[in-house]
Length: 542
Image (tube, rainbow, N blue to C red; front, side, top):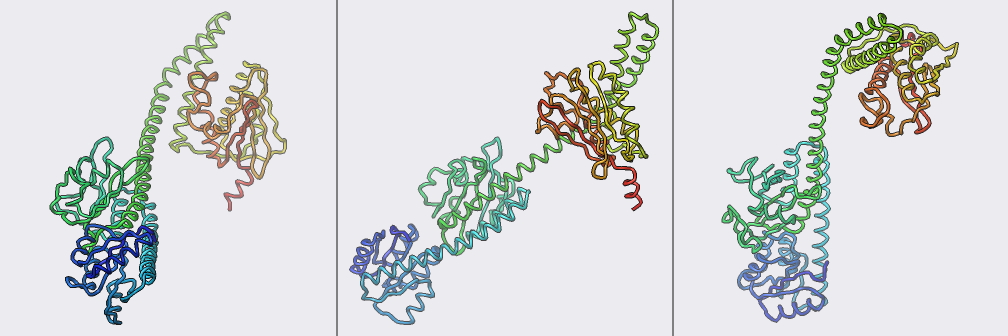
């Protein structure tokens, strides 16, 4: 209860009005009085009060009828009735009409103060209970809003909840159209027939435009007479005469997204501050839900564009690989013929051409392999393989590149390592890509090591280099197609970034795992696993 609560005293005896007014003002209340019940009704239509102190016996309109009239537009007004003709029947009837207390004349100022403070406390308690009920309903509505990503459904749900909580007969939600000073109707209830979905207004028009521009809620007692609306273009001002109106901005992301409007409260009542508070809370939740829906739509659109780019990339790789094979075959054939026919002094130059052609051919093969892997068009022909046999053969083929950088490649494979279940061609490609990657980043005069051992019922293979290392945040990305840790314009090492993605896909086809562990400045270790042959056979039999 606030000491500045506004009280209207109504009694046909001027002396009673004066005593009540001066007595209550001593306790800090804001009090006005009148001896006319008709004037009292007119005052309460124009102004808000917290409590009505009312004499039951009035010459123009009796107190009980005043109470009935007041309850049509002010449901939570605290009322204390007073009379010199006290009776049980009168008290019961006054309580039925919503009186909080009943005092008999003559009364002391203490009696008056206790009755007024008690009535205001009851009013505040009732408001708090109503507020709690509203918050519960809004929490339930928020759960519904959080579960939807459809803007139309979000607006419809929020509007229906707002109208139910405030008792509005009409309601609308208009959202700002990005890039234009226009508000477009996204949802409406009880609107005129000429106003339908998609209806739009300029945001310099009407009450919604005023709220949109100011970003502040607006509670109007009478649209036709409110001085704040002077100069505002109201297309149907005559239809809203004596109508209460509530408009609340929908704020999100630091800007106003739109306006929730409510009008024509049921029961000829007027919207209260509590209605504006409830609508404001609901608008906050609606703004969050709309922003989430917008972000989801943007993500969906970005995903579609990404899929299209990915499709175009795959198509480009497929076409490029196909178109490059024929000219590469011709270049390779003639360069090998020239190498064999030239004199010794020229053979080294021809050999460089042949080596470059083979390098380009491997890149084309990588592009083709990646395309087939991504399309799921690669199958395995597994067999019983011993890594003790496969690893040395692959290492021998990779030594040529290592020797050109004065590197040493060595391997350590347990003699009793059980066989694995793998496709030999695909396994050799996995090893070749990982070893090639290691030699590429290992400095001159350094070593590359390959280790294989049984580990936790699988074969574990490790390719270890002494290169620059990979930052932790890059570990997952290096297995993505075309990804390069180095800047494309300043990188020192060649390659298209396809070796590791191909190795990853082939390991996954073998039902294995592949990962990297690295520390900047201290090299990297690439791990992958393969199923052991005996274990694999048992699983397939089961």
